[in-house]
Figure 1: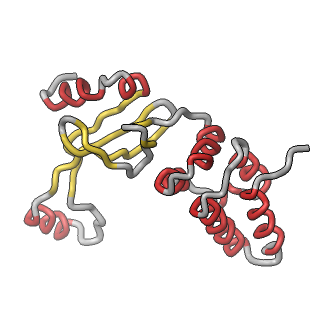
Figure 2 (figure 1 turned 120 degrees about the vertical axis):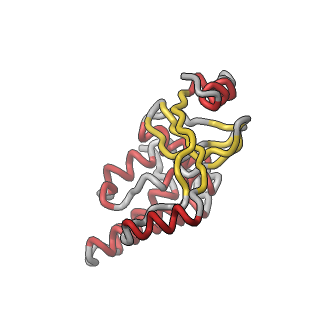
Length: 179
């Protein structure tokens, strides 16, 4: 029998010691414990996220942004485990994993990853809304939480377009109004 990882050991302790608490409290403690394991750069085994899903009712507390946290904290073993769990190949930009919220500069400007779904990555560039336009939007809908930026360019990328350096051609075509 394979020995369990330090990550699973930590989550086991939290899970076992919190069983008499409310589900809200348990879910919060499990999420915090997983973030602690990532932050502490504990080594994740490749199947840890699969085990986490099976053992700890993670559907209630494991959120998509955990991948961003794994990437930002540079815990590569956590990244590998998460990628195996969801069955996707990472998108890399200059040897850095791309995740929703990741910003980068390409040949045609700054872009931000807005979505990561399997073999597709959505990136957007934004234009800033002028103060006058923002004030007008706010007056029309005072309850709006609309940000001060709108999408200038939205591009769907695949692994092949990113890895074959077609990304520059893709951005250039979109910039010139091509398809």
